[in-house]
Length: 350
Image (cartoon, rainbow, N blue to C red; front, top):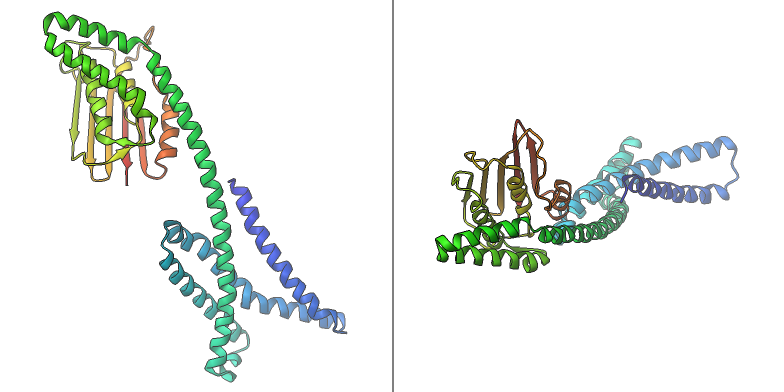
């Protein structure tokens, strides 16, 4: 929902409330035969009284409910804490309203009214504040509901775009053909090892065809795909130090959205074209409870390459997908230095 509409909704509420007070004022002055001066004094005193008694404490209560109670308690389904916080807030606002009225009347309210009447007045003002608070929760809830609907629509659209991009990357034959050719060469040298690589390739195709269709997959499944992908890429070079891959921490039973790390790794291999270089690609994945730190660094040539392998997911789509799937639960840094490209991604899976 646009910020301008939310502001308009808030302003509209208070305008309607002031109009309601004006209606009460009109009813008070309608039957009274008074001079214009008397009516002006009545209007001034009425709005001064209402400002201290209902408007100011109402505004305070409204926005405490709107910004704090809803965000910290109700949105997290802490109903009991929401009720307690609401009662405390309205009681404080009601007490402040009575204190303001008492101050306006130079202490006469407290002086000439007993504790029973004082508490009744505070309770009455607290109820008015409670009404504002409940309306604030309704307005905030409506805004949140609308935003969640729009977010789900955007997520569905982005998942559809991602699925199309994944299909396109499947159809790109370069990686598949290179892997098959390398395995074919390996068959003559070591048939048992070639069989392992062929099974890995089969598992990877199965992963792309089936595992990527679900919203979340086990973390170990994604990591298994990454390991097999790296092993197949190693077949393309005799330099065993071309890539350095390290996995730290306990995988456990974490689940993540599929293909979160793979596109960055694919891009690293696509751009690190010098197969003779030491540690041309460095990949580190650290797992710390619910948090996953992914680090990928690759070299790239500053000289334009005539043709790179096509396919894969663009960074813009990856960034949007992360924002939709892990909003406020991830940090992503993309740094392009002197012939070096770095990706640092942290995800909170809780």
